[in-house]
Structures are given as C-alpha cells and as structure tokens.
Image (cartoon, rainbow, N blue to C red):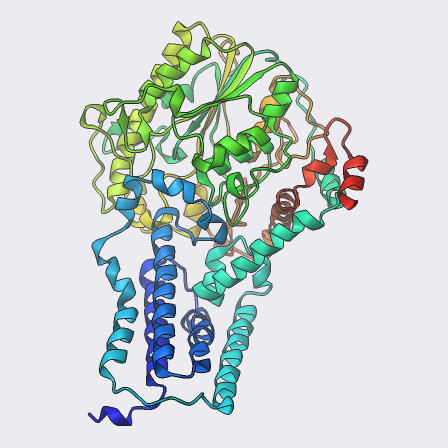
Length: 635
C-alpha cells in the first residue's frame, strides 16, 4: 500500500472514527440502556459525532502537523478518561457521573475495597483508540504541513459539525420532546445527546444552579409555599402527640431492600428478627415504602429524612449545598428540648458531614473517633454493626434525655464482604457475586439489630423510646438484573420490576403501644419527618416540606423517585412507560400524565429551594417571608 497517497487529514479522521466507534461499542456493552426502536438506535450511534468533530477539529487551527498531533493525542486521552470514568461510576451507581460528584474527592480515599471490585484488568481496552491514534501518527508518513489550513476548509468542516449538532438535537427532540428539561434523567440525556455533550450540558446546569442563589430574592417561595399548603393532609388527632417526650432513635439500615423481608434464600431465612417485627404488637411495618435517593445515596437519605425535600439530581446536597439554611427535623427537635446527634463510625469529613451537620443544627456527631475501632472488629468499610450498636448504646446512656439520634450502619455495604466468623448463611448461587454475598451481610445486619434491641433493654432505654428503622437506598443495582431475575423466579427484570424493587423497609417500633400492624400505604422517605414530628406532638404546618404524615387518613399513595419515576397504589411509571401496578401491563400514558406533571413540579420546587438557598428567606414560625433578609439581600 502506498501510504504517501493517504489524504492530508487522515490522522484527524482516524482520531474521530476510532473514538466514535469505541464510544458506540461502550454504549452497547458497558451501559444498560433500553433501545426501543430503530430511531433510538440511530440517535445512539450518531450522538457522539458532533462533539468529536468539534473537539478534534480544533486541531485544524494549528500550523504544524507536530502540534496538531500532540493536540489530538491529548484530546483522545482526556475523552478516554471521561468515558472510562463513566463506565466505572456506572458499575457502582448504575448512573452517569456529574460535575458535582467530581468535587466529592474527599470520599474517594474511603472507597477501599469498593474500587477494587469495580476496576478490572481488561479496562485497558477502553483506551484502544488512543493506542491506534499513536500508532497511526508514528507509522503513517509525515506530511510536510507547514502552512495554515485554508479558511474555506475549516469553514466547511465546522459547518458539517454544526449540521450534525442540529441533526442530533432534531432527532432527539422528535423522539423525546422537551428532552433538556429532564436534567435529572441522565440516562435519557446520554441516550439522546451522547456522553460528551451530556457533560457539557451538566456544566451548564451546574453553572445555572450556582447563579440561582445569587439571583434569588425569596419571591420564588410564594409559589412553592402555596403548593405545600394546598397539599397538606389533616393530622391524625389520635396519633398526634401520643408519644410526646420519648427518645427517638433513627436507624439507617445500609443498602437494605424490602425483597429480603419475610423471604428465604435457598431455604435460609434471611432476616428472622426483622420478620418477627412485621408481626410485633409494638411495631408499625410499612410494607410499601420506598427510598427516594439519587447520586448522594446514604447522604441523600439523611437529607431527605431531615428536611422532607428531595436530594439533587446531579450530586449530593451534602457537598454542593452544605452551607445552606435548612429547617431540619433536628432543628425542630432542638426547639422542643431534645438533644440531637448522629452516630456513625466513619470519618467526620466523609460526605462533608462535619460541615452540613452544623447547617442541619445537629448538636453532636459521634464519628469514628468516638468509637474503639480495631482490625478485629472491622470489615469492609469499617466498624462492624454489632460492636457499633454495642458501643453506641453505651454512649446513649450518657445522653441527656429526651434525645434524638440517627445511627448509620456500615456492614451491609457494597461489596458485601464479611469475615468468616460473621457468616451465618451460605452464599447464593447466581452469576452475580454481589447478590450472592448480599444475603450474608443482610443476615448479619439482622442479627446486629436483634442485639441492639437487647442492649437497649439492658441499658433501660428501650421502654421510653421510639425506634425508627429504614433502608437508606438500594443494595442491588440494575447491573445485576439477571441474577435478581433468577432469585425472584422471573424471566427478566423489567422497568416495572426495577421500580418496585426500590422498596425498602420502614419499621416504627414503639414499645408499649400495643397497636402494631402492617401498613400498606404507598409512602417514601420524604414522609418520615412529618410523621415522627407529629407523633411527638410537634406542629409542622408552617414547615416547607414536601412529605406527608403517613398516619394521616388523607395521606396520598404517591411516591416520586429522584429520576422522575413514581409509584402509586394503582400505577407505576418507569422507563417512560405507564404500567398498571396490579398486572404489570403497559397502559396508555394518559393514566400517568397527571402524576408525571406533579412529579416534575415537586422535583423542580425542591431544586429551587436548595439551589436558591430559599429557606434563608423563610420564617417557619410564622410561615411568612423574612422581609428584613430580602431587604439585606437586595442591598
């Protein structure tokens, strides 16, 4: 072959083509994106091209081939890193990385074994295009290009690039109208505008949210407040204040999903103690309760429970808005004579807790330095749950009563590993090591809760407490759907199934209540704040909260997920499809449309409150705007 006759811009073409082909292959092999028709497939194929034409095309402005080649290699490496970062992130979170997440670097050092589970030796192939480009530059003949590229060539090139942008956006808008209003649905964005363009859009969204605080003046709260007041349910007079003055112990159960409750694995009972609580005379077990977290996972769960607001769609509020003004549950409890705290044997700075806990008005954080942590009593992410509960109860005996504390467990955390002496049941037998080990760590968590109850009784704290236990987020992501289908006896896990699998357990255990029952109301984490405060007789009628008291007879069976999906007692909306909840059959979208609209409204209102730091303008005592704050902001 006569290489001297290769076109002048062969290296540029190779750079574009290799990265384009690699990206499309990665879309189909590393991300589980549902492609429903030929149009979606076409969009997925062409969506990387417009960005690549622009990114690599800048090389046309350089005068020499040497400088152009260096630029092309640099861009190729950067794009490979960006794409692989999304792949690694997707393996863990089943989601795409955002700008806000990139600033959460203080968490990276604590990932430990989770990272080693995510990264594999064959990941070097994600850099294949970089290698091909370097080899092409090395072995194709050096062209003597010492003069600038002619303007008409550059003009024609970038006209083509712009045409590709409009073609991509036009097809995407046809396939999914109002696409760019759904910034929280990152899979939908990547499917339609591509990974690289998605990151540009994410930068725009993050910049816009940063500007919201600077431009906010409090007037935005009027519409939000009207919505909140119009959707408040009447309190349950019988339950309001019934347990006033009791201690409240919140136990955030790491990665615990509802599918293990009252279930077995190869004949082994997975959660014997929690199973007993579902029938306990002192326990309210909410069987249709859902987590509503986003990328913030555990920290999102904390945020939702404290504030009855959603987390953000693009990162963890704990990081992005840790210094905001909030009207937290802890603040309300402080005002009513409670000592408030969080107990978690992890670094104070992890998830930025040392900063945001001050904003949430939490009086004391019992972090890792409060515990006796050794190699013998630790596994995976840190202190095992049994010694964590034992040591925590010892500290509770020293707390001023009444107290409210939130305990965050650790052992049932990805990658779900245990030391040999803590294994109580064998592994499951699927193609997913993650699911196989999950049942073992859940069994250990269940045992630790049993011991926790015993410790509370021995310490004399049990009878005068309310124990609220809830799963913080999913443990088994959609990346393990094949194994989950095997366990559940299904042919496959559909979008409908995945939505319902977001159910996590909620137990409100009240010793001496003698009114325990299984409650099948459809509810979510956003409802915990008003529910518990009302049990304690604390009024929330002026609070800017989106949740609802689960004991209210007017409570609506409607749960919104952070990504726009929702579940009601009759419907499930997932994957842009409306399902009849009872049958799982797809039905007309019109049945879901009113709820879709409301979900978008509530997510938008929550985002406005957080991004604009709007609660600094709000007086929860009166339910009115703080006019003096508005005046100061304007000045």
